[in-house]
Image (tube, rainbow, N blue to C red; front, side):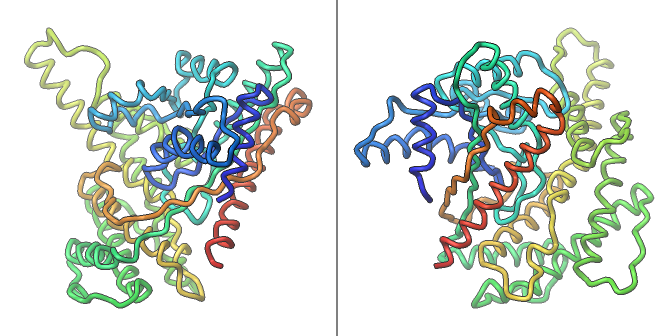
Length: 418
């Protein structure tokens, strides 16, 4: 929707009037590839069609979590550096990566693209928490531009990405629900094909109840987890949300204990990042295993295995820290797209409880993507405040970016409901 808004920003970038960060929503795993295609192919084609071609193909230098190359396959590891993608760590300062990103921001011929959530957030119609990474990188660039006595403005262009699922795949959605019921030992409705997706809602609630109960039982039997008591005057949805919220820190504690990590006073998401970092360091060690004795190799294998098991708890938290029971709890039936998202999230949850990760997430439902650009956040205009109060100004700019992304979501609903 409104590609001219993106094209105008690209023209300013190519004419040295701005330095540009593309902050694209990342609800699933497809958005980096989609965004790269849009900037590499679709936008130049639209500009030529409108009779005002860009100077050159804008491309996009993508920032990605370092772990993508670890859980991805050999093709992903081959493609990422050749597409100019740059890895970044959430809880580790890696000078080489940060220097590369800073150089691209200041002088690169392509805009920088990154997800403001910091990782996949699993819901496209609501905005979860976003991190300050995009804003902090932008202020680095604005500071570098200022010191170099250059006049470009540093802007962050928010883009919200949404999907409309193909109604021809109705049976596939129902098949996922049937599979979940079978995995959970639920038989009710297992062979029934509903006429509408809204009719699946009672079955989805039953599946979530069962998944929650099984997960709680696992942690209670294995790690002495204490299931919280029910609260008076609490709705079923509130009860489920509270129980999930109580379970996630406990799951992280198990992983942290296994890996020898002190959680300190960090948030659940920061703790998850630390478990991920240490877990992958054990599963994919950087040091060579050549020349080890049999005993040393056996202990290295054991260390790897314990790292893998610790990350199973992290994978649960990675998905369910974004879980919002109210996403489907409303007075009117939720949209088919929200229902499909919820079905895929529950299927993903079941897969992770069985040892899977993001690579095992179902992706067989056809969908159409909508890209909605929002209003830019001009960081150069905030530099006087940034010099005086850098932390507060970064927070204000991040809140402004979140508000602009929320406006994109509202616009998407308005435009597509006509």
